Amino acid sequence: MSAGTLCGMDDRLQNRIGPHPLPDPEYAGELSLGRLQELFERCGDFTIRRVEPGLAGEKTLAVCWLDGLVSGEAVAETVLRPLTAPERAAGQDAASWLRQALQGGVYACSVQLRKSLDELVRDLTHGCCALVFDSLGLALSFETRSTQTRAVSEPTLEKSLKGAKDSFVEELRPNTALVRRRLATPRLKLVEGRVGRKSATRLALLYLEGAAEAKTVEAVARRLDALDLDALLATGALEEALSDSPRSPFPQLIHTERPDRFAMHLSDGRIGLLVDGLPLGLVLPVSFAEFMKVTGDRSTNFLVSSTLSVLRYLAFFLGLFLPALYVATAMYHQEMLPTRLLLSIIEAKQNVPFSTALEVLGMMISFTLLQEAGLRLPDPIGDTVSIIGALIVGQAAVEAKLVSPIAIIVVATAGICCYTLPSQDLAAAVRLSSFAALLSAVAAGFFGLGVFSCLLLWHLAGIDSFDRSYTAPLSESRPGALARVLFRRPFSALIFRDALLRTTDRRRRT
Image (cartoon, rainbow, N blue to C red):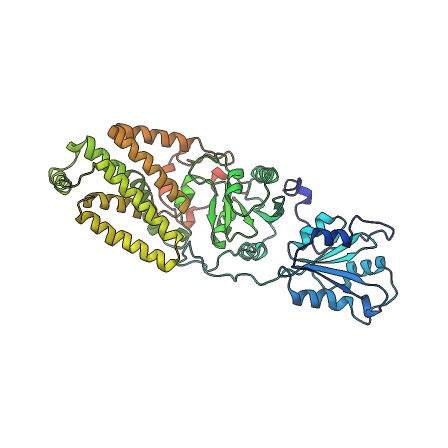
C-alpha cells in the first residue's frame, strides 16, 4: 500500500466528485498515448476509440478502456455521447476541451485528472474509462465500472434465522453500501487504500468515530501501509500482517459474510476491513470470547442465548479433550470408570487388534480426511462421500473388528462438538489442538493432559490483539468475568460498551 494512503489523516477521504483545479494550458504532463499503447501491448481487451469533439472534423481525442471491466452503456451515454454532441462548439483547442470536460461537459458522476501514467493505468485496471489529451500529456478518467457482478444473496456459511438475509459480495462498493444502510451516520468513517504492487487491490477500513479508539485505528492503518506484497488475492497475508501472533493456530480476526454482524461489531467499537474481491468482512481487535458468539444471540431471549452459550463452551471442551480423556482413562486410569462401563469397554475391545491410542488416533485422522473430502468435492459427490464414510465404512470397520464402537462414538461426538462452534477457524484450531492433547494423554495419562492444558493456557494468555488480551475478560481482575463470558445480559443492562475496547464514547444508551 502506498505511503500515506491510510495513515495520512488529512488525506483519508478523497472527494471523487468535487471540483478539480483547472490545469495551466501550457502545462505538459508525462502521459502519452503511445506509451499507454506500449504498456497494454498484446492485451486483447484494451480498446481505443478516437472521437471528433462536436463532430467538427478538426481534432480527435482518444477514449480508451479495458473491455469487460467497464459498462458499454455507461461509456456510450456518459462519455461518447456528450463529447460528440453536434451542438458543442467547434474549433477549440485541447486545453479548452479539457476544461469543458472537467466542468461538466461529460456526464459521468466521477472524474479524475491524471498527470502520471501509473495513476491512469490504475484507473483503467479498476474499471474506468480514460479520455487522453496526448498534446497536453494529461488524461481524464471517468467512473464507468461494469455492474455485471454477483447479486446480493443469502449468507451460505452463517445462517440467519431472525436476522437479515443479505450477505457481502465480491465488489467493494456494494459492500460498503450494505454497511451504510445499517449505520446511517456520518460518524461511520471509511478510509480507502490499495494493497499489492501488481494487483492494486482496493481496501476499505471502516470504524465508528467516537466508538473506536483512535490509537487502534492508527495502528491498523500503519500495519496496512507497511504491507508489502505483489498481490492481495486472499486473506492469508492480510491476517498475518494484522495479527500480533501470526504463528498461532487460533484465529485473531473475525470473518463474517453478514453485513448486520459486521455493523454490530463496528457499533461496539471495533474496526472493520473490506477487501475488493472477497465476499467477507474482517473485524478486529478481538478476544477468544468473541469467537464463541453468534449473531442470533442478539435476536433471541437472553435466557435462551445464555443457555446456548453454555452449551457452546461445553462443546468446545468436549471437542478438545474428549478423545484424550478417553485414551488417558482407558490406558492409565481404569479405576475411574464405573464397573459396568469398564466391562462394556473391555468386551468391545476383546477382538480389536489395535491399542486404544492407535485406534482413536486412526479414527480422528479418518474423520478429518472425510471432512476434507466432503468440503473439497462438489456438493452432490461430497454429500455422498460423507454418508458412505460415516455409515458404510464405519459400520464395516466395527463388524470387521478393526475398531471398537466406543472409539467411533467418542471421535464422532468430538467432531460434532467442533461443528457447533460458530467460527470455522476456531474449530480448525480445536481439531489441531485435540491431536496434541491426544498425544499428551498417550504419553503420560492425566498428568500429560494437565501439562498440555497448562501450555495451552499459557499460549492463549500470551496472545494480544492490538494491546488487548486474547483471554479477556477472564484474565481481568474485575468480578463477574466468567458470568459475562458465559451469559448474555438483557439489553436493559447493556448500558456501556466493553471496557476492553477502550472506546471514547462508552455509552450505548442514555
